[in-house]
Length: 222
Image (cartoon, rainbow, N blue to C red):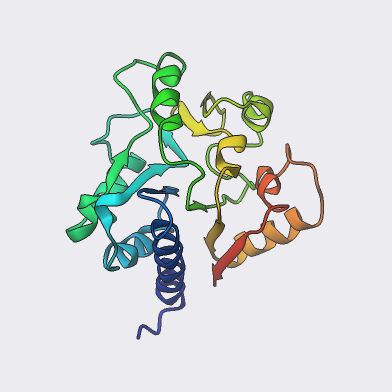
């Protein structure tokens, strides 16, 4: 048993997600897991990869992605391949959010079709949160935020002044299409941002608020 609270939290989240997947796979042939990128989920990915699951029946996709090559250091797809799709978990069907198109605007239709064909509603959506209250690529300073919060389209191409690369994100509507939502975050700063988010309802200022009204399992460690 690890004494590191963040590793222990990751293990607890992995166990909860594995249980959710098993429950849904008892009822359906396939189950969908939506995960987020960044540094926080790495120990969660590694813990989940070690779980005994019928991985060949599990689909995995991302909440959002930078429009970069799949081999790039800051690719969320690379993060998932390096830390989650290992060992038996490599049997899962991973569906990325990028295409051969030069820009996310050009690639969004193709990626949207690919995403719409997955086993919705998702078994679980794992969200992260930034210090600015963003989740997925729903950024407060993004000019596409209103669209991403309101559209029924599966994905939205995103340009954000605070971020160096263009991005593609699942829309809030698509992220809501899940049996379970989990918020995975670490550090005191994130806890205070969440407290602020819980104290108001302006989604444009703190986009994580779009998910606080649905049942949300909050996994936090200092």
